Image (cartoon, rainbow, N blue to C red):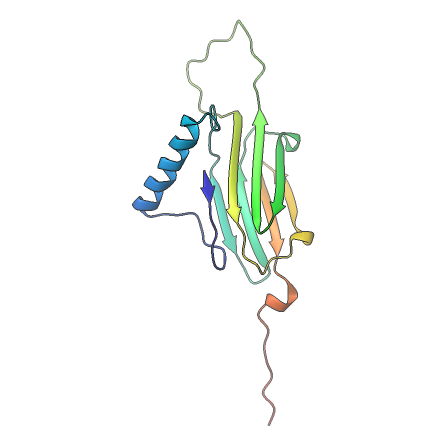
Length: 144
């Protein structure tokens, strides 16, 4: 599932029509085999006066299983993890995902990609993009 963050960094889509469009694209990707076995981790995106942030829920994942790339204002988050198989294990319920995923975010032009950072803590991956200095809000003193 891709989330486009146009203009200034929109949040994850919330209206029903957009969710249906996202679902349609996800189903189309699965039909072509590019999303076979794929799942979509829960995600938050927000902005403050200093930067933009993307946070993904990846419980049980290791940082080595996830790849982050920024290319032409697009952030790609990809992950792949397989559970060790066991002939003696029979799942009665399985809601903690593994497999592979891809999330794509269109970033605003005012972020500084070179200063991006990522932290994985307590099952949450947080990716931070600071705003460029010229894009930050500043106060202008009125003389007179």
